Structures are given as structure tokens and as C-alpha cells.
Image 1 (cartoon, protein in one colour):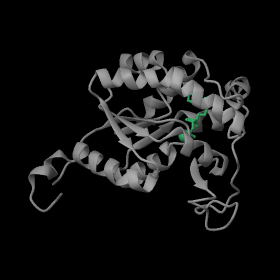
Image 2 (cartoon, protein in one colour):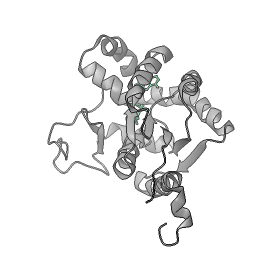
Image 3 (cartoon, rainbow, N blue to C red):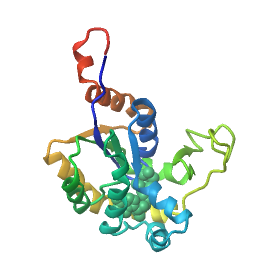
Length: 226
Ligand code: ATP
Ligand code: MG
């Protein structure tokens, strides 16, 4: 029988690069547990937890929340998935967070979605979200079957408070300043796998092939089972 290895992966990329969409496909195709820092924070805001209320203005302004707050939140959630293969999305976003993560587990691979900033700006303003699941739609190239409603549950879609042009600019700036050094951090450890492109559907087959090799290395040796 072909065994699936345990894989601990991080997905990185600027806001709107397609991390959420690709994560959804990875979960569906390979069954990894998915942990998205943005989804977790938005769930806290929606539930009006103390943490959510404290972090909302920070997020709405396009700033990063403090390292210790997000690290504690993510590491707590990770306890329930530590026995399985997982995919972290949106964490780590600073070198401090990457070092904190290294202190508790070893990451096997970092998928870097490299999408030009110009493309991203257009995308984010036409993005709609199903809040409970994190499913993302885009009215230009990936619309829901029924306008304004989630395909799976039929529940209403929302636009994020931080998807305004000014906030997007600020998020891209913080990505350059605070998150690009994390790419260097992983690159220097030989863990970074970069996938470049302007369309998620064109990037996805490459990511899928890469993960297949990582998860089923024995398939490489079996003729006809590539
Ligand atoms: P995308 O929705 O395309 O992934 P994004 O990367 O900007 O775009 P999220 O990951 O959903 O968005 O995060 C939304 C906001 O939550 C960030 O702008 C930031 O304020 C906060 N946030 C999320 N993850 C972190 C983190 N690891 N460290 C600090 N702040 C974070
Ligand atoms: Mg996201």
C-alpha cells in the first residue's frame, strides 16, 4: 500500500496571492489540516472575543497584530493537529514568528506564491468571502454560482473590511518590510519552493505535482503511477 508521509508545510505569498484558494485545494486533494491565521482572527472578531475586539482596528488598518498575540493563538490551535499533516497559511509573517515556530516544530517545506503586486491590487477589491469556511470568490474570474451566496452552504458572502484600496496598499507595504525577510529566512535554510505566475489555475498544477512528490515519494519509483 502506498503510505502518505506526514508533511508540515507553510504557504506564503502577498495578500491576495491566492493562498486561501490554493490551501482549499491542498486540503481537498491531500487531506492536510489547514490553519489560517487570518481566518482565526476573523472568527474571533465575529464571535466578539476579547482578543478579536482588541485586534480588529489593527487588522482593519492593514497592520500586523503583535507577534506574541498571533503566536500564542496559532500554537494553541496547532496542538489539536500536531499528529497529522498540516498547512499553515498566514503564519509566520515575521522573522520573530518564524523563530517561534522553529522552537516548537520542524517545518518540512515552505510554498511561496509569487504573484506581481499589480495583479493583486486588482484582485482584492473584487474579492468576496464566505466567512465561516474561508472560501474565497472573485467576481471577475471565480464568481459564486449565485451572486452574493456561497456555493456550498448558500449563506451570504461578505467583503472584508481590510480589502479597501488604501488598506491593501498598507498591507502590501507591510508584506515587503516584515514578511519578505521570512522568505529569505527559509531560503537560506533551503526550504523555500517558489511558484510564480499571475493565475491561480496555472500555478496550482505545479504545487500539486510538488506536494505529490513530497507526500508520496515512493510513487516516483513505481512506473505508471506518477
Ligand atoms: P489573504 O486573505 O490573501 O491571505 P492577507 O495575507 O493580507 O491576505 P490574512 O492572512 O487573512 O490576509 O490576514 C488578515 C490580517 O490579519 C492581516 O492583515 C494582519 O492584520 C492579521 N494577521 C494575520 N496573520 C498574521 C500574522 N501571522 N501576524 C500578524 N498579523 C497577522
Ligand atoms: Mg488568507
